[in-house]
Image 1 (tube, each protein chain N blue to C red):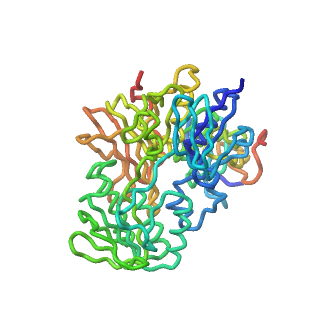
Image 2 (image 1 turned 90 degrees about the vertical axis):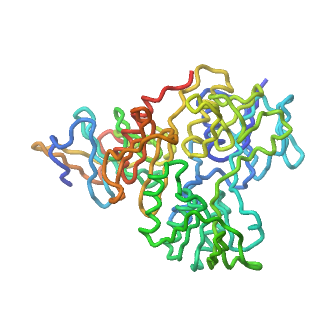
Image 3 (image 1 turned 120 degrees about the vertical axis):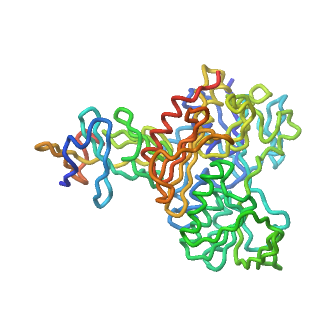
Length: 106
Length: 390
């Protein structure tokens, strides 16, 4: 597991990027944490820099939308989903487990 | 009786139109006509990743797996040569015609060429996939590249060619590149990227002619300079593909003239994308926008107009981006001469900044270099603040 940050460092509506083999974006949506691949599957842009709207993130470059819970594309031009990653909160710290999909993700 | 809608143009605007038709519950026949033989592809990478060889044709395909469900009839490699507005028929170059209940004009634009530049090998424009493949092959030989025009296409080609190891000179007629879209101050800042990365930029100099027999050897400038060149790219803007409509009765100007929601003067005929000059209430004139995002978003509005189904979506805030020399430039809004540009974050010297353009103290446009997160917030704010045409 990769430590991300203390929960207090990632308030609701915020996102952060974690360096891994493939960078991962971690989001706080009203106290729930979600992690997906950071790089948009359409063209090179960081989703952690995107616009968070409920459980969707909009890519800052071309406005592709991804569902943070499933990684699925919810708005074009992206065609391919992003991977989700399991997030664990322990003792006030946020961790991600790269490669293991979030619960409930496809 | 089943209805037919003909979409003339098979690039981003045409494909987005077909998708919007289905999204808005149109279940009749859709015929998409395209003059290129290729299935729809994304053009922005043609000057960047595709030209550099890091993106493949598959990577830039616009089609998605779900598009199979759209049930489109494709007529690729077929040029439309006329429109009969009485029968709403699209006339094709092979002599056939497609009779339709609705017609969407999405024929885009073509690269402007340099007079006298045709017929010389090594002289390129960049608009289509075939253009990009030809240029990529030529750049692979290395040598000296002269780019005529320091607009976004020219700058991106220069950037890609530098990365490929070519010796690059960019020639610009205007004293400051990109002064039109960004204003002189910010145009100058963005143009500094050339020097940062070893590209020569010559401004305020026109091109007198191209030198060479069979293959280009040099570019002669109006100040008498001769620039030796192995490859030349002409990036001096684009012309809307509207000549085929000359006798159609469709009102034309700098593009197909439409109202704010895509309607032309002919009932049942709408226009979208680079070929369309839509009425802008804020600018108080018809504005033809050549940006990718416009081709993506505008069709939904025009389709609503065509189907006569409800209120068209509000006009989106114009947005474009450019990737040059590793820097990401993003712009949203509508800038006019006289707007005041103010740096609100970062610094120009660091090549990381956010600039807000203000008119009467109100933000009207925003420019970011390497500030995607902050830029997105400002862009959102503009979207909410800009009044939409009734």
